[in-house]
Amino acid sequence: MGRKGFIEEREFVLFIHGAGGGQYTWSFQKGFFEKHFNPIIIELPGHGESEGEGENEIGTYAEHVHGFLKALHLSKVFLVGHSMGGAIVQTMALRYPEVIKGIVLVGTGVRLRVFPMILEGIKKNFEETVKKIHQFSFSPRAPHDLIEKGMAEMLRCQPEVLHGDFSACDRFDVMNEVEKINLPTLILCGDEDQLTPVKYSQFLHNRIEGSKLEVIPNAGHMVMMESASAFNEKIRKFISIVQKVRHKCFDSRAN
Image (cartoon, rainbow, N blue to C red; front, side):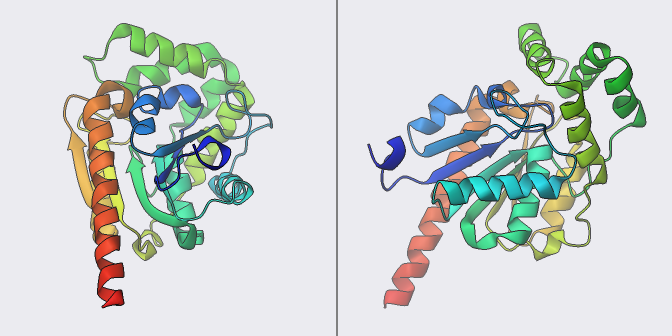
């Protein structure tokens, strides 16, 4: 084992959850990615076991993530972001491309407008609103226990933190900046995603030069849980391709 328990020579992959998420978001990724990479599953301030009060701006969350990477003395990592996490990754790619090897955008978009009823409902009837959110988070064929687990985990989040998350999403807009992203990019979404429909991912694909779009069948917004095997393998393959391209670049420079 290498520094801080990481294995030397393996790529670092940082996973960033969405609104009201936490470690559980990536329950089906941790074991798989530990076999091939150095996975790091961050919990944003106010989420899960992480201290703090949460934020209401995507940019502020991006600064937390950047500070986290600096604290671990990590550079050139792969970032995987789901929904709000995908907004954070886009912001990181625009602000700090020098610390990133590649990005994976999962169930996200350049804008993430939130229904007013969700923002109001979190304040007025938290539990009922969390149930409504989860009605749209999974495909109709998702196992019931998976949905129940997701609801239980989101209910652990403080209402003010969840409201801040969705407020941050609602204000997020990189429509006019996304074309500036110049990093290897994989875009993943479920074909039955009701919260960030496939057209969101298609827009990202059209605007980020050289990006690859993969639409995973029979999955909703929580595609990393619903179709974990396909999801994991597509990311593994993406990182492998980026590694090969980088090696070729280095080889050509050496010659």
